[in-house]
Amino acid sequence: MAAAGLQAPTSVCDLSLGEPRGPTDSPPEPKQLPELIRLKRDGGRLSEGDIRGFVRAVVDGSAQGAQIGAMLMAIRLQGMDLEETMALTQALANSGQQLEWPEAWRRQLVDKHSTGGVGDKVSLVLAPALAACGCKQVPMISGRGLGHTGGTLDKLESIPGFTVIQSPEQMQVLLERVGCCIVGQSKKLVPADGILYEARDVTATVDSLPLITASILSKKVVESLSALVVDVKFGGAAVFSSQAEAQKLARALVDVGAGLGLRVAAALTAMDNPLGRSVGHTLEVEEALLCMDGAGPPDLRDLVTRLGGTLLWLNGQAEAQAEGITRVAAALDNSSARDRFERMLAMQGVDPGLARALCSGTPAQRRQLLPRAREQEELLAPADGTPWLRVHLDTPALSGPQLCALQGALVLSDRAPFISPSPFAELILPQIGTQ
Image (cartoon, rainbow, N blue to C red; front, top):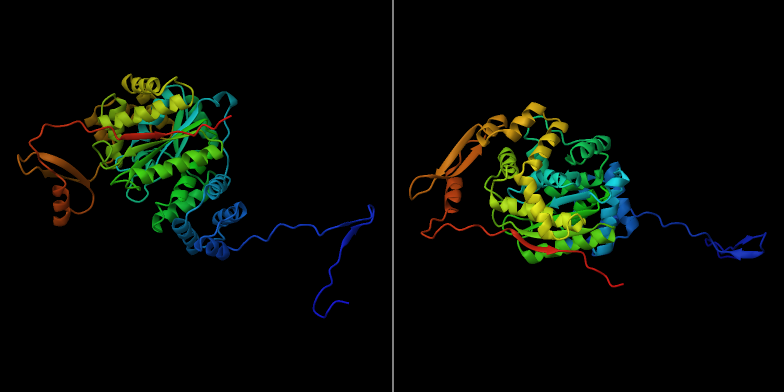
């Protein structure tokens, strides 16, 4: 007889077989959010089920804002291994709808992503250039400004009428007729990442390597890509200050992508200076159009052609990177990229007349068509008095300390002008395993 308060063990038998059968294994009870946060806070490892549970709570609203912030900070401080990062990426991707495309497009589906940089308007140029080269630049699910970097969506929305939210059906029509579209996250596409993306910006967790990796790749997993290139920035105006730090993220992106069946290459590019000559939403749209005129800043053109050439080569549409670079450059010089951009604008809500005027007008005409700041303030070089910087602002005039900081950035020299070096530093490719 069992002692009081205890149950004697019992066995369950299958009478038809006459053999004992052990108790049925039931799945473990899911951990509560405080337990998951404590586990990661203390350096523990989250299982795939743990991560799915956290992401599910983020989406269904049962996770409080404080809990989301606490988990993000725990991940930021303790990190995640490769398997955890893959699980987080997949869970974010599975939080919404998956995109499906015609089978005939399988070898054409490509995309590009940037970790963000000051003046980075590459996506605005590269998407239509790749479309002109015969790719399907699948809906580039872009982000908004994060930290000190500008967002692709914010720049495009400075064009009156441009609509970043498109249904999967609308995206497919855009890809059929134009070959590219640039859209934002919606409640149907990777909704969990949209919530975490905003939370990272206000919780000082923007620079977490696993969070960056999962955020970028989750939006690409749902796109059913054949090839992806990620522009990983490093330098004084980037999330990562050193090339070595950027290499870690680049390798994580390539390795996690490979684990999830994505062919990913990561380009390391310097961001010690703004890309191009203009910073600000409408100003960067104008500069992107200049690049699609076959002109514009050489560093912007260099990066667009290198990233595009890499994608064409990675996707098997060019035999070598050099061939891919040449094809992308030709799309900029013969106006075919600009034509695709005009069609994309018109199909994403911009009045066709405005889209045509923007893409065919002179720089001065374009400036009249886009929203402008109420005031402009020019800073003069102290040596000869000519303007060297123009600041567009709706806020009050620049303060004394602001003017001093800006003027302090100007260095005058007797040396001859020099050509800025290419921002492209290194390309990290998937590791080829042995057979």
